[in-house]
Length: 419
Ligand code: UD1
Image 1 (cartoon, rainbow, N blue to C red):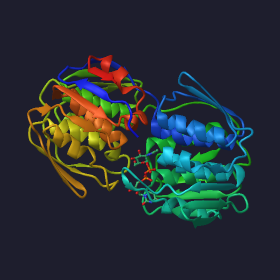
Image 2: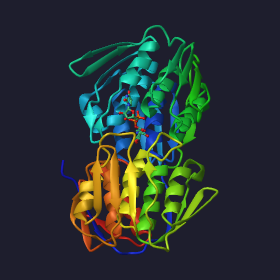
Image 3: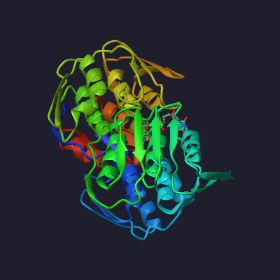
């Protein structure tokens, strides 16, 4: 699909303030969770993202009444009796697999297509399915279609994930929230977005404990009610703008963030030589010195360095003093920005899990293409620090996770426009 492009004239030093939106990776599972309450929920601080619009379309297709005004999405799931997510809707957004646990929890049955691969490589859901089977769900897979039927209301289960999958943890939470049993998830994902989903469910009446630790306990309750909930700030969006400040030797105040979720990112930017000053719900980043190389950056599950920030940091390190090594431990195919950055004269060698970034003095404009969401954002960051006018195409990927990236960046002095 060809979409609009971003034209970016690099070399402007960014200064000013940016208000960070609600987290994409939080709003999607929370929107799925609204199905469980059979009532009205108002979800505030929801960013206008194409992924969130896709989630709203799924909710409507299941029978929900959904309205979206400003940054509030109101979902009435009283009549959400649907149990099928169409192939088209599944393809629009890979992470729509998070609807599986919610639909099953709500109506006891779900039919959807297997998510298959995506830009980041194969996206297996074996851990999701294995856990749901442990909870008594009967699952058949036929020609890429998953047919799932819940047994009696969720039974008790003690589930140990072989790796702390974010999506699997969310699906188990969503399926177990309603019921009678006690579900224990060991080696659960500890990402802040998991705690945010737990926060919404608890406000609806769920009994969940241990969020933020690797053992989550969900005690099923017979019913949930609607509530008003405000989505946590997007730590990846904040890290992206930290990258934009760093590469332009700029100074940005990021407002509406939660610095405590971002220690691993902040420490990498500090190591690059940036001044990073968190206080309350703000982070001030000042990049007056040239960026220096860093020790090995390894992506890890939270609280380690997030895989979603890796391409952004790669773009900044591309224009730095010295050589940095990046090890990508989470996704197979997460160096999609590297070949495009090379078109901009970056010196990056990537093989398997490892990328070696030899910093160069200058990056130069080139026509480049976003091949996934964060790779696209990384190209925007690189373009802001490059000489000349860069054209970034395929930006529908960027729109999946950033609300009008060009508006935020031009408000702090970037020369960026959408054509
Ligand atoms: C979520 C985030 C994504 C982030 C990722 C890791 C959302 C919408 N997306 O994705 O932005 O990059 O967490 O922080 O929240 N895996 C299996 N089997 C499974 C499930 C996962 O092998 O059943 C593997 C995956 O292939 C991947 C790793 O586990 O290598 C991590 O995946 P997971 O944590 O599940 O990521 P997502 O929930 O898909």
